[in-house]
Image: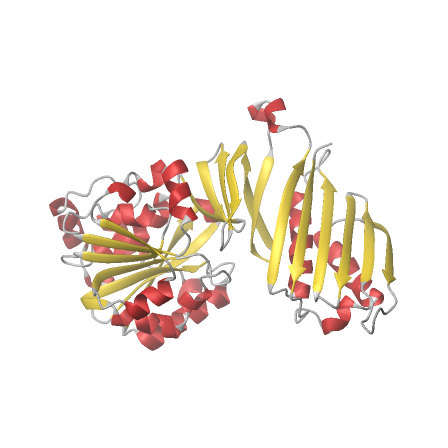
Amino acid sequence: MQGLHLTADLYGCGCEGHPAGSALLVDAGQLATLCAGIVARTGLTRVDEKFFTFPPWQGQPGGVTGAVLLAESHLALHTWPERAGVTLDVYVCNFSTDNSAKAERLLEELVAAFTPRQRYAQRLLRGPEPDAVPDQDRHELLLESLNPDSVYGFRAHRRLEKLRSAHQDIEVWDTPQFGRLFRLDGAFMTSERDEFFYHEPIVHCAALAHPAPRRALVIGGGDGGSSEELLKHPGIERVVMAELDAEVPRIAREHLDSVHRGAFDDPRLELRIGDGFAYLADTTERFDLIVLDLTDPDTPAARLYTREFFMKARAALAPGGAISLHLGSPVYQPERVRRLLADLVAVFPIVRALGLFVPLYGAYWGLAVVSDTLDPCAVSTDEIAQRLATRGIGDLQLYNAPLHAALFTLPNFYRQLLP
């Protein structure tokens, strides 16, 4: 029977996400109330429940085991207060209707209540083996939450690779909409057919505003897409890619040729595996362009979204240089965008926000170009067109001279997030 099975093992649960605090690990009543509320909010149908608190053992409080019977199937969980641990198990049947999004939200809200320091999750599609199902009938759904109230996703034919590196879960999927699709910790990063929506503006809005970029640094960007765009500029003599996880460029080389287009084999590119924060703290090199092509702030990249890091990045700029980065969605993550813009304004004299819709991310997306002296909005359309022609950059699917100014023309709701 077709269905979705989600499990999560949580460690270091401080339970700061719930008013009951650590009592949530030992109080069956509090836990039952939490589960009932989340089930109701997700739109799943609670049929019955059973929760039991174990007696104290060796001076330690007993944990709680519980199950909620759903019309769609079940939720089960168990707590270990002595370890500050929780296991979660959610299964929904998708035979008559797709309940996947509801199950994903149920699990995410439970995790948010327990606020674990570490989380290990598994996602299993129940049903026939993929090779037993015709391509047109396969319907593994890849889902991601933009915030607690919004979920979006895509159908996938099959998973090409999955592994747990030292830093994150890495997956590559074959999808009918976007071809090969790359995910980190369940979050969409890039795909073969839409990567230009992200990589072209995050690079060229700064690179074309710069009169003669020679040296560039990409922090993150292990899929190679940003480096490939930088290397289109004939004046670029050197690109350093400081990528945390060695598995990301390895997988990109194997599966994402249409994203990096051979950039890893360009002699101008130097791949440095390690922490981008540490790299900037140690380097004496100065760069005309720095691209912060990072995962979101709630990932191992969190330190790279701080004022302290922005100050280190500023110190690594050559005179007249610029930094570009993504901010998140002003629609779904307005407070994150507001906070990042405030931190950038506190460090850089020039902060220019831009935005566009990125299909893979399912949202209108915010980016920014920041600098001490370089203002991308001060360069005319004619000058951008001239630089594109002089540099021989024609292999672009999104960016062009008239679009340059349009990307920086913000709708009012986005402008309201600016300091």
